[in-house]
Image (cartoon, rainbow, N blue to C red; front, side):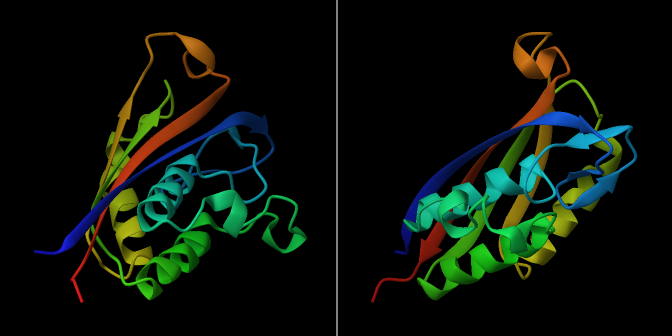
Length: 161
């Protein structure tokens, strides 16, 4: 029986004018994007934290510090590839991951498959990644349209020695 571990990741960013919007590694046409040191992709950031947490490898901030000038504007898919390489080096493999985007807009249904494909490709084809979305019925900063949040769960497995 393989050893299994679950990790949970959460990320949130405020909307900002004049920056591109990227979610799940997919650029989305929008008048505003998300403020962040990298590209602000909350979907991918939450997934990274879930993977790192399940593997016991810290969090996105410890691996990719927000004060590192080389990471300014970097693609979060690149960060995901690097984080998952460390997860694999620790002997773990993704079984599946589920990410929920929280916010009123944008509607991601037309881009869901593209996001899932981009995230899965960044993980080298390992596991199944699903991306879903929900609103908060006008509650909180996401309900007021001030930003977006994402929650992720990742299940890792490794064969016993």
